[in-house]
Image 1 (cartoon, rainbow, N blue to C red):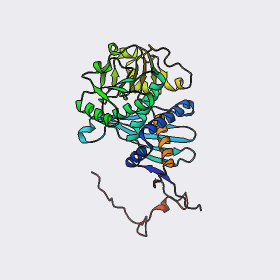
Image 2 (cartoon, rainbow, N blue to C red):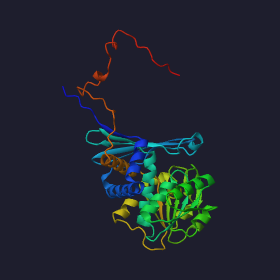
Image 3 (cartoon, one colour):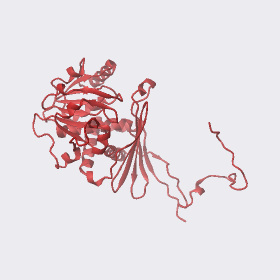
Image 4 (cartoon, rainbow, N blue to C red):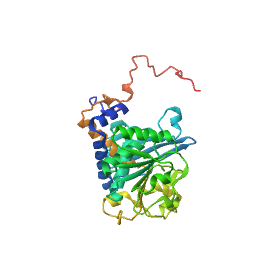
Length: 362
């Protein structure tokens, strides 16, 4: 009979992750997270990849996002419910698991609501750092909701963006963003329309929430040399760009099979040319080739970014000596005797007695 062996799973609550980010510093965390994402994208062929599994409803979507390499498996549970704010709930809520491939042991269970905002912003800034003009200093941020502060800070710290043009259909969202940026020593100027906000900028980031085929940007708004991050379109039937915008320059994606279904390129023919971002990082495909090029990152969020985020959180927890565990797996004296884990205390007769339901079916 084997000795009892407890399985340790590190647990990071939302409050714990917030404390860890505050302790380590938001700017260093964004920069390090971008480095983790870049490192994993460069290992692209090492991963077993698939598009996320989505369950849609009239009010939103719930998704599972799995990925694995030879050592670690990860998944994220995430929702997208644009009207949740009317009930005092976040639009996006998520948690994730990191597990050992060799044993199947879950090594980490963590919140990913806050962390998804961080990794999305880090991914946007990483893409812009790779594809935008190096002298970019002015950005338009269209959609000023829960993601917007993270996007602005990532672009400031990773790209050196100093001027933010803001627009949202909800003036209160823009006022909130201006106030939060001011607390951090950054200035945001609110404009009356998307067209006004994007005029003369170097980078445009769209991060809107409505689950509709929207046209946030049209081709006549785009100027030579601009880089576009289309972040808000992330499910079938949800877009932000007019199709003509996609025809203006080279389009880059995370995982093409998923983006064809969920991204802005869902509007285009199946043979519309795109380049997976990992190819640019590995030097297998060109990115921007001239200062007048228009580049577009059609970002839908891919499981590899969450794998990177979970790796980052695990390493940060170790560095900060955060050592809180959760008992997910029974500790068994005999690994073949799961039944023996039940504390029946002599009253769990299993023969000669008909069971009675504890809870009636509704």
